[in-house]
Image 1: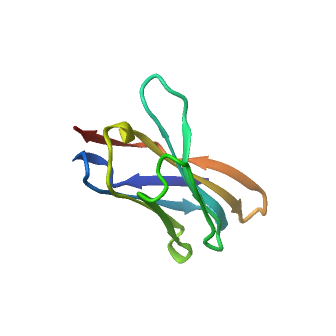
Image 2 (image 1 turned 135 degrees about the vertical axis):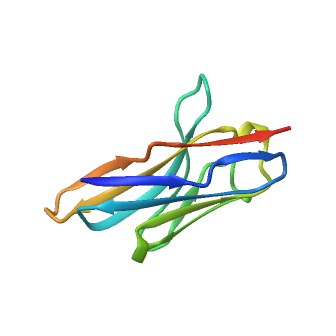
Length: 120
């Protein structure tokens, strides 16, 4: 009923930047909180950043000051600007959204993931 499509991953050198995008589409009444999570090989998925519909954001300590989350409510899209990247930022990045459907029931959705690789 709802799809989250991510884009923008890739390979970058340490100190470089990547910008991720995630667009929600489908039977949407309203997209509430959105966020980005990541999972490196052999580790659990961890929160990177979240943003409310009103624009309030929250970041993991490891990315504060380097990453910026933003959203466009008209496009049901969330972005993650990643600057000053480090090799330890290498992971699959997943988009997450709390979506209220036109049936007025809310569900949690995940994107398919996009790989971000930072070389040293």
